[in-house]
Length: 94
Image (cartoon, rainbow, N blue to C red; front, side):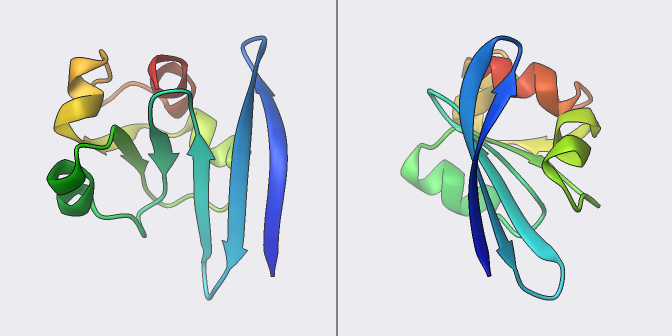
């Protein structure tokens, strides 16, 4: 099953995508990049120049927003995203 949902975060609207696999694949699209779960590849994001922040151990969009960012792409770092900030903070920069 694929769920696409608009999310209101900090007065802005984002697009969330959830794909049910074993564990859910979760992605929230920002204006300049993405907040993704552990299914996503940091190497791939760096190779194509995408801004990506990865959170792990999440099962919902709320989990993503409240979880600590574990990894970031080079482009995300340029946008001010840092490891250790929560997903909500990262998404506002993405």
